[in-house]
Length: 154
Image 1: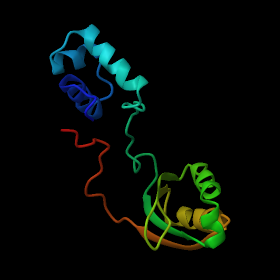
Image 2: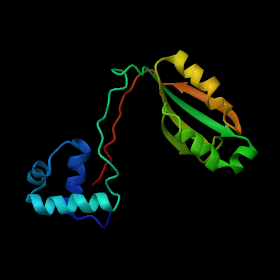
Image 3: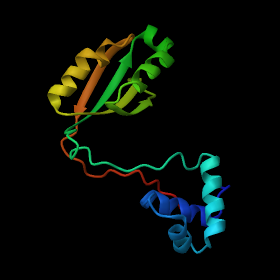
Image 4: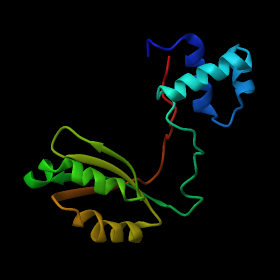
């Protein structure tokens, strides 16, 4: 973070709020002219501060009504092959986020599906069949209180 100047921090804030803004619009909001603003955005992208720009889709409007958090524990053999499990998880479009955990469980997955029946099929036909899986604890989210991709950059 220390490599970012105040303008770059402002640029990142603006892009987090609305990635569809033009360079001219961002420049105006952060107090720069377009050329220096474009150079800063280009640097932020090249150096990996900005990993991509996407549209945030309402999952329910596209028919993904089940939102599930699954904690996965691997057996000893599975833990020895974390890369294999990680690669398999990346291939499932239903898995939106996957984290390696420290503690009693090895992974936390955020999963979406059409409904609970679709999640059940995914659970039994795909997730539970991965090599090394010892235990899966699924928690269904009833409602969403807060969801953001905006990092608290100060």
